[in-house]
Amino acid sequence: MKLAIVGAGWAGMAAAVAAAQAGADVTVLEATRETGGRARALAAVRPDGVPLTLDNGQHILIGAYSETLALMQRVGVHLPGALKALPLGLPFPDGMGLQTPAWAVRWPAPLDALAAIATARGWRWGDRLALIRASLAWQRAKFVCDPQWNVSTLCQALPARVMDELIEPLCVSALNLPAASASAQVFLRVMQDALFGKGFGGWAASSLLLPRDDLSALFPAAAQQWLQRHHGQRTRVHLNRRVRSLERISDGWRLHGDRASEDFDRVIWATSAGAAARVMTSSAAAWGARAPGKDPDAMAEWARTSSALSFTAITTVYAWAPGVRLAAPMLALRPMPGALGASAQFVFDRGQLRPDDASAQGVLAFVVSASEGERGWLQQRVLQQGQQQLGLPTLQPIQTVTEKRATFACTPGLNRPQQVITSGLWAAGDHVQGPYPATLEAAVRSGLAAARMACAAR
Image 1: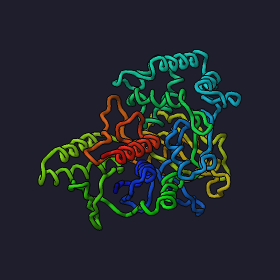
Image 2: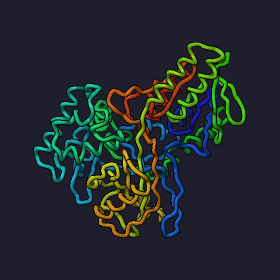
Image 3: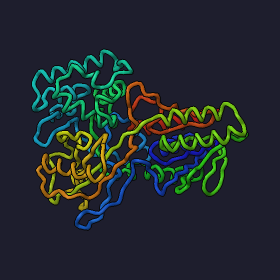
Image 4: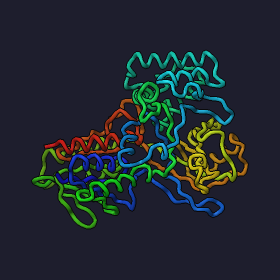
């Protein structure tokens, strides 16, 4: 079976690995010069002229991301070396906030999370008991709620401190939306897996896994190398190969690109939602004019659903503070007054993630989820936030990266596009129908599922 995978991001490369292992003849077609999609490496230069490697956005995994971690391990990534594991914790620079105590780190879920709640600094006992009661109520309800609820409605009985120091940061980091706008049902699924689920490889489900390697090396580049080593006779990854359109032929699909056209038995489309919708819309229109029928109609309907998605931005502000080491590799930050969409929720000390890399020392990554505003203004506000909350008057900007369409807006009752577009044609990506928000785990799961369907189809 000859399979085309359009797009070499995390979803596309996950599909390629799974399909190659299932015996398919796989061709990956990527429009850009590198694999990785929206999670890839980025070259930069420190203010003192030292070159370094950053990412187009600071990502984080958790121990519950079983499919992603298993796939990384399958393609040869040494997980303990590639990821720095931290117990569940959202400490602030002043030491307040949620942290798992050392004596509870190895406790099974959800006892580790309960220990973190019970010992949260700055919280009153009423705050702790309210969160424990809410968590147990969610568990009794099997983590299901009214699909039209937002997270604020779900958590309306929780005290303000719990909302401000736990729910809001978790919600905006996981769903890239504030609690008042985010889907409560999807949030509950994340909470179920992170606080009550099983971890991978000896890590707790709630463990925070911070990448030491750049995001390209973390999986996409490793997957490309693994495919070449183990399935090089039947697998090809072509970069700079944009696919402009596709059409049904008698025994499969014909993909039309900048250079040539090529025929395949089946196709997995693993680009961003917007790019996929544009190609499906134009292809369905051109094809339907010649041969009206269910296939063009299905493609057009899928494209309409995908086009209806709205998106939110994530901004990462990279800055340098010579000789500085934060109290922890990751700290939570409080929002600046009147600037919620221009405030970082977290800061990462990349020097602690890469202790042997001299270029990473003193490099901090400030992450603004659901960011709003112009990039230069965001950078200015975040640097001010870092200077005030971290006590770093000499903080210098390195580079600010804004992904304007970083994630789809995971709102209540959202209708996401299905994985099956039409016969012999599947979609993969973190935007397709599934239980997770737009995360690396969602992308990987969609790629694996698409590969299974493509290889099982008759």
